[in-house]
Image 1: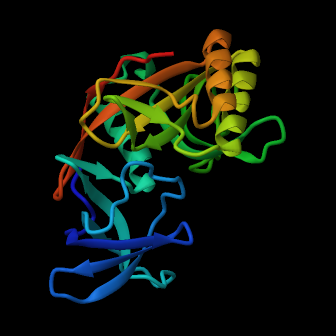
Image 2 (image 1 turned 180 degrees about the vertical axis):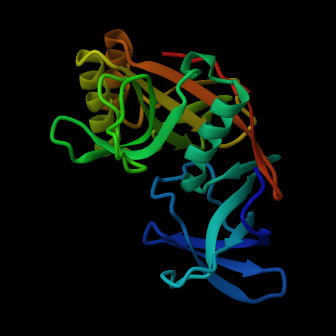
Length: 248
């Protein structure tokens, strides 16, 4: 997948207030960019590191750039969490997740959960019947579904990708919601998009969020499917390299 616009290189000055980074561009000017990665980005942020920003031309945006890539040692790491779901969709199209094949409907941001307040990243659906005058986001009845949550991660420990990089009550809730989906008779899957290539496996970051690690193991035991994908990251495009083994 090519980026929507050509990335602009620079050097990281600082990250602050979770959503902001200051960057010195190659012409010497300094800009503030938006970071949609609210995690700690442990092991990624170093003053002076090479970074790449994605220009965004949208009337609702106050800042003209999104923090997209950073160089960590010899690896390029994508820190733009909005790209995790498109990468999973690319993996679905390319057959890298055959367990999730043969679901012709792929619907983003569908409400689900015990209280109906959560939104699943992707709903896969097949079969069933749609209303006669169905709207684009109407769901069929009596269909077979897979509720897919996507988590982007950049944390690496001894070549094993980890999630989360900070305590995440939201992530814990998603695991509980997926377990409830399985109890209701449908399928549920968690897909971890590892946004770097210098990794050999994936596992929970128990030392950072032990509750999340325990919930992930409970979810797997309850029937929630877990997959991890490794990305090829470059300044011109982003792609899926393949699957990673899960180490629980």
